[in-house]
Amino acid sequence: MIRSKAINEFINTFTQQVFGTSLEDAKLEHRCVMCGALVGEFNDDLSLKEYDISGMCQNCQDDTFK
Image (cartoon, rainbow, N blue to C red; front, side, top):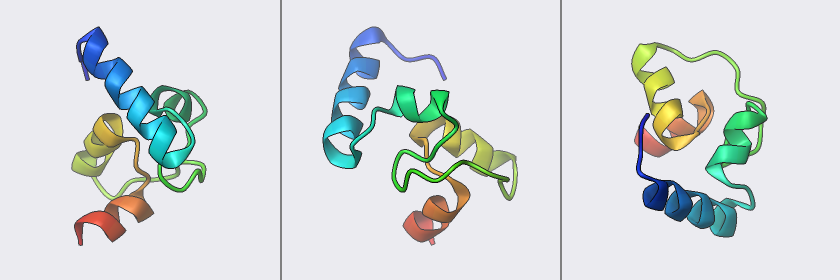
């Protein structure tokens, strides 16, 4: 996902403060930004796209959106 530099900085600062890791670092380590678990399989392409946006693993997506 292409975002402006300002938006990326905001998101990284926010996730660092709330979850203890930036979205950028979580993605580099293939970890969920919310729970810190290694990201595994996703149920579908939409869930994979959501990971690209939010950095949430499938379990956290399920807990958040269902």
